[in-house]
Every structure is written in C-alpha cells, then in structure tokens.
Image 1 (spheres, rainbow, N blue to C red):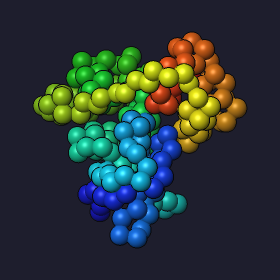
Image 2: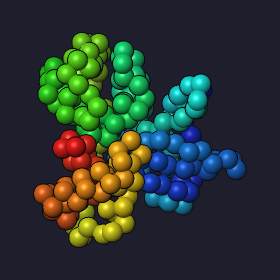
Image 3: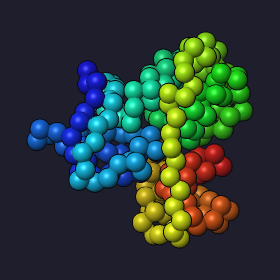
Length: 200
C-alpha cells in the first residue's frame, strides 16, 4: 500500500521511527540499523511495508529497497511473521543473512533469538535459490562504531529495544549489563542489542 514514506524524522527509538509527512506522523517499526543512521529533525525516506492483521495495522520501514525485499522474502517463509523477520534483520546484517542463506549456514540463522533449527532450515530451503540469484552486495550496511564510553541513554535505548522485542524489562537490563561487561563500553545501541539477541 505504501511504497515509501518521505518526510522529517520527529522521533526515534532503538527500533522505531516516527516520520512526519504532510501533517501526518507515521509510526514505523524498523530493524536495528535504521534509526542509528537517521537524525531527528532531518529529512528521511524509508521504504515501507504495511502488515495488516485483525488486531493491528503495523508499518515496517527500511533504509533501502533491497532490505525491504529481504524482509518480504523472510515473511514469505511458512512460520516466519513480521516480528520474527524484524528480529532477524536486527540480529544479522543483510549481507550476513544473505550469505548465510546462500551457504546454507543453519547455525548462523539459528543464532537469532526465537528461530529454531526447523525454521532456520525452512528459511534456507525456501530462499536459497532466490538469494543466490540476487546481488549479495545490494543490501550492504555500513555499521558505525562509537569511540566514546557508553552512556546511560545508550543503555536505556538498548533495554527499550529488547523490551519492544518481547523480552521482559528485568531480563533486558540484565542482558545489557552482561553484554557491556563482556564486550566493553565502546558499543552502539545496535551492537548491544545484536549481541544480546545472540547470547540471550
């Protein structure tokens, strides 16, 4: 229904962007990498997919068309819904996921929280031929690395991001603390959540 939404970013969280366009503010759920690449009060454009269910209409947004295409590939797989697809694209970069599917790397896909061996195998079986035909470089994401010590706001954003994915607040707080302790303080929100999803 909506190919993309172009406007001004008025609010962002770890996995949520609010874009105002023509006087309407759209609340858009995003993979982890998206909001780290956007700035509040700056113009932005997200390629969108509208998920319609009986209990909710939810917009999902992506930085480029290739990421959206990968999301659509994922939700076409039996047993993989939008939330699972979003978590997958938050745990693995587009290139990591494409390469894992092409190499039939069940272990990497199964490292995503909530994906078991059966679902990982199903993703590979149903998508490997499509992915192998596509240009693996089209979905490349450049990850930013912060050199400053971690701040309380970064920790809170990471906790909020995990909570939005269905993890209890207490568990999210403990996991974030464990990640920071293990991997150090020079982490972005995206990196903290990615590590948390892999080790949770």
